[in-house]
Length: 425
Image (cartoon, rainbow, N blue to C red):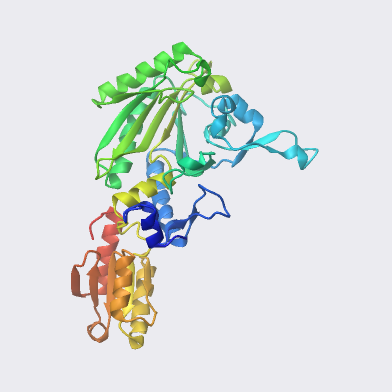
């Protein structure tokens, strides 16, 4: 792991997510593991876990059903989906299992996307028009062989956790579903403090190679016209990104604008009328006839890794209480105060507040400096006065001090900040 001084020598600013990640002990990379493959430390796992738990709850409320899919799939899966034809450059080379077993024929590829697995889940049983829309979501681990020169901390990695979802709907539903996804995506990102967005309508580059996109001109025109209609109905300003379309269809790409005015990819919504036809997906309409559904591919945060990297720089490592790995650090002035400090920590932990006691032999001033450096939201100092009065003395991140607050009042204060996901302390 590089020291802070080594990071500075490489030109990293103090607010670079790689520097913050090291200061807060969130993640690291190892040459033995491989470039672009992040290792999440216990503190980083807390941040990830809270974001992912929030993501799942919000999706459940919005009518999505969570699924799991394998890390690998047979060659014929990726041939049929079109990935080997259009996306092979970004895929890891295949594993030939026939070398391991005579019974196991064919090559396996590590998945770059979850789409074909969700299609297979849909096809596992017949569906009526009354069931649609069906919304599958997954925090899917995918792997893409990004060029080593383009790797950049968490912002560009090879092991990616996609906040993936696929909405399978009838033609008369998809305009409404597209509108709902946009609203949902803006809602999720605003919870993290992003208020400004730049919207791009991603279309084909008609001057590029013919095999870059699936060849079905009527479907492409219908998809593009539908997206334009939704954007106009919602009065959303947009720029056109020529060449930004996916190989299977046009997209709406939304970039969050950080406090420095920089754009970061967050939400993407891709309209796909090709894959359902290619896979023979169908539902039974009210006349008992088979009909081909429409599929929306979408991600709200982009990827968990990149989102956390961008967010660390946005908040300068000062994570809101609900995301802070340690929400409360308790500092006993001396050894005789440790018992009371431990009792406070036990009570906080019982009430789902992440608390730690500093039991080091360092001076109280050093303990405070260390907790400040770790950007702990609440620092509690315990001495004779606090034990005598059965109260707490607080130091809030930023320097504000609160004296003689009861433990119950403090717990209520922290619980409210966690529940509201407030950035304020």
